[in-house]
Length: 157
Image 1 (tube, one colour):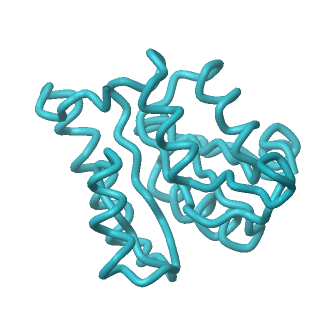
Image 2 (cartoon, helix red, strand yellow):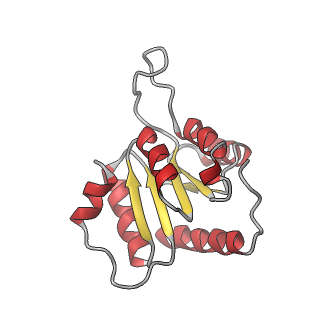
């Protein structure tokens, strides 16, 4: 589902936005859960269930934080077997001028003992394990946005 269609289904919060967050996950249940959790904390939330669409959103929209899932279904683009995952998208985003100072948080249900260090090594600002603790997510986003505003986050490139 495109993020425009998703956002048209749900009224925007009446309060001013604390920031703009892009959630990239192919699971509509996780998308909806994260959308409402972030919206209720005062964030303006954009959604994408597709990595190619997410890259287009990143180029077009001014964002403060990106939440990026690792696992996506095969799309048949690399030797017919997929090959595009959150790490592929993170690699692309790290090379984009539009993202150089935007913190990217990897979200995944994979084993955190292996996925978290890999996410950090790939340039993610943080790692959240699914199921996502909504309060922890909001706290990490607020901390990363404050660090970014203060110029304390290293650029991703």
